[in-house]
Image 1 (spheres, rainbow, N blue to C red):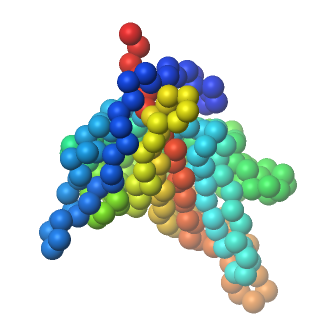
Image 2 (cartoon, rainbow, N blue to C red):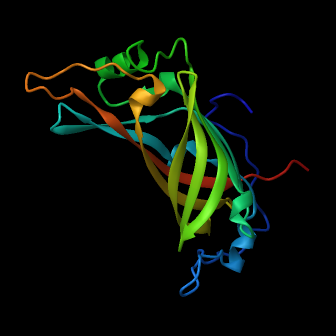
Length: 218
């Protein structure tokens, strides 16, 4: 893979599988995958042009700052027959963080927070996947920030599946989890006159994913 390349090479899919319904839960039983999802089994990547990997955090106790990482790589495998065999790995460039305010972005990339010079990447790698309910997957994984690795649980909602006008097979997922940033060494904080924190310890991570099926080389 070309690290943080936005122009990932993809071949158009000529024999696209038909659209399939999402996973469903049987009444009164643990959710089971819909058999139609077997058509989605295979390797996928996150489409950077139509996806967002971001965060939100409370600022000064009264407002919310939102940002995103604009450069990342991914390796995804989805098993529609047995979701437990699915896996994901995402590598973010810490120097690509953007919140819309240059001075704030520089602060986030600095030593008080991400220290992008020393720790150029944030990495998420799944360790287990469960079908939690209709259209909902629970992905457990290891999140590494500033070389500190801790487990997180990501709730993913399956949005749907299409073949776009260019022949690419696409699947959509929305995911979220909340972390305590101090557990990853992000301990900087200033205090307000009223005694509260300038930046909340809790950070909500958001994954708006448009995945594209990759095609093995001939």
